[in-house]
Length: 329
Image (cartoon, rainbow, N blue to C red; front, side):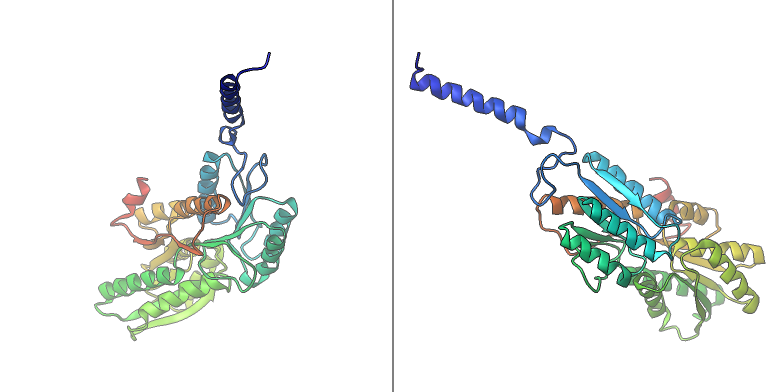
């Protein structure tokens, strides 16, 4: 029996409805059908490459990124070399992700120049690359977005805070500061330059030295101990990271001195040290928020939405007066 035209139309509508209900890609977690994303049916696999996991900054950032990715049904992998000086291993890790054809890669580079070749390999493979914890453009390769805080501004906030501490202690902007630097590169340059710019107007504040401690707590403690022996009247140590500020604080306690210590990161363990009066202050850069924003930015890119080249994340000076705001979160 041949169906009437009205019957055929009704059957057609019912069939279309069934197909839409059964074939809705949104009902399959972790499967991508987004424009610009991997082919439908493929799990979203994002690689986050850190300098190392010796600092709780990177651990906190990765944990937040993985938590945010889990909400989307993504697999967020954490890769990091053993030391923050091992840039060759970091390059190898990025290249390994490229060979595996992951969906996207986010990098916090140890050495900006060294990582460019690996970024270009990812570009050639059609893998979107992101940089987290830095807003400074790489010298080569295409990066979809830089996600991080203004490191020069963070250094300035620390310098301004340091100058006021010295003024309150000595009755004037007159004293001695010692800088603990990370590995040479953008992160160290921006943070230390911001600090120095902030104290520059105060000509009587003397910079005793600027010594690398390679982002490591133990090295910073050793450098600070030697510095206190050579210059017993240092007023303040500024570490370009929390780990180095914590190392300086250990040295200060061992030497039996009263010396201010300031870092950059606002890591959970440093916040506790601030509350306990071990470390004086830190410029909090909210690593968990940075991790979440990184995933959200990657999601927008994979969804085919436009993303800003630079996505700036917040900063705030934290000391005993306001540390409970962060500890309660």
